[in-house]
Each structure stands twice: as C-alpha cells, then as structure tokens.
Image 1 (cartoon, rainbow, N blue to C red):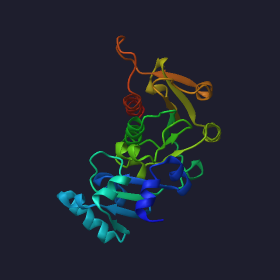
Image 2: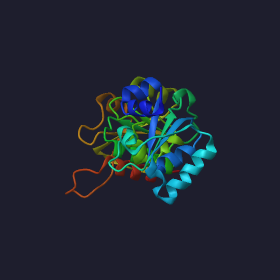
Image 3: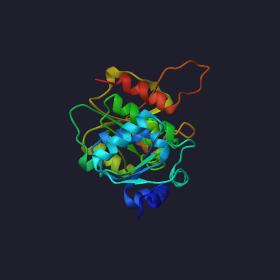
Image 4: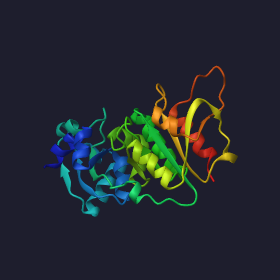
Length: 252
C-alpha cells in the first residue's frame, strides 16, 4: 500500500488496529518519533516542510535516517493531514507490542488507568504527565480514546513513543493488579482527601470521564476512593490537571 493511501486510511481507529500502525503529524511529533526506538514505516513530506529552519533540519535528519520518504503535493498532503495548518510532514510508525506481559514491575510503581477518558487532549496530556512524573505505565481501559490517535500523539508530544502506554481490558487489568499485589485507588470528588503518607508502594490510580466518572466495575474493586481538596464554589478539576497533581503528590 502506498504511503499516502496508508496515511489516509490510518485516520480511522479500525485501520490503526488492523495494521498496528499509527500516524504522527507535525515537526515536533516526527522529531520525537525519530528519537524513539519505534519502527517507522515511512514518511510523507510536502513542500511547506522546508519553509522553516526546523523543517529543513528535520528533512535532513530523515534523509540521514534511511527511512523511506515520499514527496507529495500540498493538495495530496492535506488529504491525509488532520490539522488545519499542516506543517508538511507525517510519519507512519508501528504500534509497539506492549502489554502486561512485557511490563516490568518494581518494588515501587505507579500505574495510571484511563477509564473512559474520551477527549484526545486530556488523554495526551495525561500520558505526557505520567511520563514526566515517572509513572510506570498508562493503561487505557475500554471506552477511552485510542492512545495512537494522531490528536492524542500531538497532545502528548509523542510521550507514548517512550512511555509504557497501551490498551487493556478491565478483567486483564484487575487480574494483573491482583497477581502483582498492586492496590487500586479510584478518584472521585466524593472520596477522602488524598494523603500520600498512606499510599502503598505499588499503586494503580483510576481516573475517569469528567461527565460520567469511573465505571462501576473499577469503582467496586477499588480499595479506596480519593479526591483533591478544592474550593467549594468549583465543581471539579479537569481530569488531566487532577491526574498531574495526584501523580506529583504520590511521587516517591
């Protein structure tokens, strides 16, 4: 399949899952992908990539990397791009084969469980924050946006290229937590105030959709439900902001 046709097709989640491929759009995302250990199937470039010094530098790096590069017209490029003002570069990468079977668990670990987080911007911000604050992994449960969605990748600035981020079913998650003796904390505005002094060494924190919250199955299995103290005239925090604060508070 030609790179342009493939890039167009990979805008759909079903195609990404079928081929185990994703697209990274924009100079910064492609730069980050090149720095990672993930395999790159090919790159599309349009004339506007050379309009800025950073784009020129990226094109030179692509030529030196021996990655297949296909030059296309600006019109054809726009048919595959998702941004309103595309920067002229799209890379096609292979989704890494991550799972609980390949996840190393140390004496101290922090897992973030995304339970129905549907907004790409929030999901991407959480992945990037989890990577920055040393979380062991970010696991997306059913109902969560695809972590390999191009919008998620842009929002995370490619953090999932390095950070252990992957999808898993609820039963697989709960079974893994039990086998590895990892406690599960749920987050909810009605929970008890977060106290890091009581946090176990091995802990999974579940964060949910801002509208509907956590799924009943996750809520029922949580050993504790925690919240962040906020002003009474504010109903809730953005899920990505709240996750960042929780992770910061729970750092070892």
